[in-house]
Image 1 (cartoon, rainbow, N blue to C red):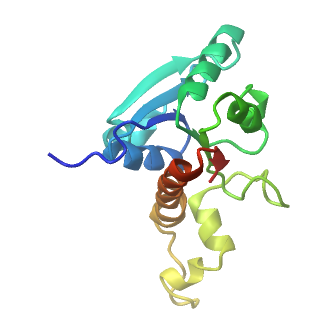
Image 2 (image 1 turned 90 degrees about the vertical axis):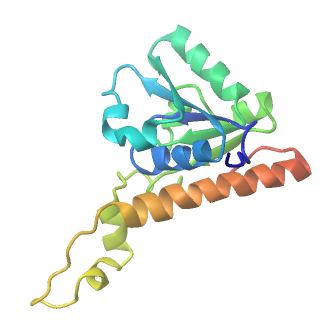
Length: 189
């Protein structure tokens, strides 16, 4: 049987697109208990995840607009070791999950805010998609040629969404968990 290094770690994953479910999948593969928090008003993300990224997770449907369900959401996040945030800046706060307030309730909470362009700056409120990141970084023309005879071909969302987004977020979470064993405090990654 494989070792489960994250066996006692509880993760609250707010349902989102590619990088967040990939990060949650990696953490679950290493033994973390991942609760997938799905907003009832959105399409079920498990249909988009595919069987692989949704397995080993405990789906919980909540109405993020309902005060009763927001309290449940808050309680789940406060009881977690890790919160995976897929939203644009300000959304987490708008649904009552301000990371600073959660950190006061749970000083050991690690919040991974997995956004396309960070929490501040001129592009922070832009939607983030793999092809955009690859193009903005300047990498796109180098992938399948850099000439009119050989135009670039958009790659699958493996480069930015999974490798740069989800994989590095999972690594950041594990590093933050290790750091927490040394100082006990919550932080962003």
